[in-house]
Each structure stands twice: as structure tokens, then as C-alpha cells.
Amino acid sequence: MALFLSTYENKVDKKGRVSVPASFRSAVASSHFSGVAIYRHIKLPCIEGSDISFLEGLSERFYQDYDPLNFDQLPAATSILAESNQLAFDADGRILLPAAMREFAGVDSQATFVGLGRMFQIWHPASFAEHRLQQRSLAVDKTRGQLPAEPRGRS
Image 1: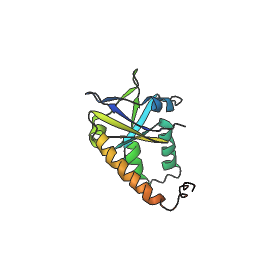
Image 2: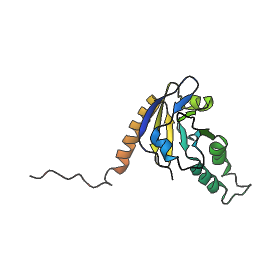
Image 3: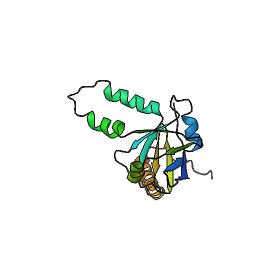
Image 4: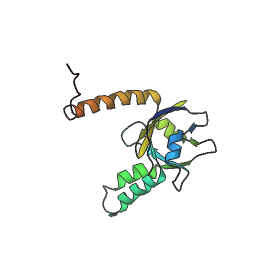
């Protein structure tokens, strides 16, 4: 199981190639596909990615109880699976981000890779900086009163 951790900022060249962080490449090294799968995030202005086995599992969940007349399954499957791209690593550990994906996320000369465990995201650096602050604020608000109090200094 791939595990994507930490945050990295990498240069995107004029052709749209970007180096995938070494730790992310290591995370997918045991996969049967030497690369990553990416798709547009459904709600956020970023690209979401994973190893191919994550999307295979997601596809299984979509079609486990597939009913061609159940129209609740189709939007998510279309939004994620139909718009996914399998991107193989080149010899230098780079992927070629499709122009439509770069445009969607506003990624031009720099890309921020954000590890989220089983998935990762690719953001425009300034957009991620703003998103990170919002997420931190939400995390603080949602955990207020749920975490043990910090130990006080001894008198």
C-alpha cells in the first residue's frame, strides 16, 4: 500500500513535465504500474493522485453492487475514473502533466505535491498556501476540546 507523506514544491518545465518527489516514487515502486494515476479533485482546485491500485480499489467499490439504473453511482465514477490519467515515470522520475489538468489546477511553472496518506494532491503553490491555512484553522476548531490539555509547567 502506497503512503504519501509531506509537502514538496517542484519546477514544471515548459512541456509540462514535473519531477515526482522521490518519496512518492518510492511509495509506488512495488506497484504493477511504474507511475501514478491522477484526476481532478471533485471540489477543490487541485489534481488528486495515487498509485494505480488505489483507483482499482475505488473502481471495485463503484461497481461492487453496480446497477445500471442507479444514477447515484455514475457521477462519481465519471468524475474520477473517466477523467483519470495514468502517467508513467520517465527515466528522470518525471511525469508529463496533461495541459487540461495543469489548467484546471492553475499549475504553471511550479507545483506543490501534498502527501495525504493513500492519496496526494498537486496544487498551484499560492493556492495551496491559502488552502493549508484554511485547513489548519478548521483542524484547530474541530479538535478544540477533544484533545487532552497540554501539561502545565511544574511550580
